[in-house]
Image (cartoon, rainbow, N blue to C red; front, side, top):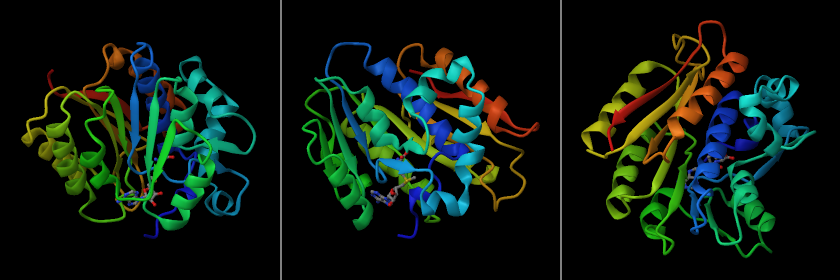
Length: 270
Ligand SMILES: C[S@@+](CC[C@H](N)C(=O)[O-])C[C@H]1O[C@@H](n2cnc3c(N)ncnc32)[C@H](O)[C@@H]1O
């Protein structure tokens, strides 16, 4: 396991993921019923943009650095939640900030050091449970939750060549056990072919009510670069697509190059 999120926290793709995560959490916490949030690939929870790792890549400057400099109204909620200064939250800190007293958060992280950091961060929080375990395995082990309402974030590092296939199979298995859960799976767009295959794989698995929200930072011509990213969402909350459109557009306007693009595509009807 070579991937460490501290090098990439707050970069453009992280901001896309977290801005949409905030929208999903806002929609799902609008109803008073308890919500279970499962973050299968959690990282260390929050990041120091002045730290050694963030300083080595400087990736955050093109992401949250730009957004904080000129925050557009559509992103105000997300940007405010990220705080100020050198602090940048990971998905666990964002989810925790939006949890109500009746909600629970389960975090899985496999890297031993990162899992230990995450455990320390939430050690005294009775609403958060940290598991040092395989997040894919946790999908079927921890679902369905007693609350019967859940948001599941699947955010793997895409270090392995078979990650897209693993992700599609894991989603299908989780959906079979818990078909009413809301699933949000992040994926990179380096070039078009692997994404096309992933989408076709998902469509072949006959899961209903699926959309993708994608941003291309530029035309995906050089597969060595992260040219964009997407989030595939199963069972998006009511009205999510119309709320997500201006958010994606605002992200594209600030984070993408002139030949970038943003779009929401419906893959399967409800
Ligand atoms: C992209 S990062 C997660 C970032 C985090 N979700 C956020 O938005 O702040 C992916 C994380 O997954 C961890 N990881 C890799 N394989 C895993 C697995 N099979 N199960 C759980 N965690 C895993 C990595 O150590 C890394 O911390």
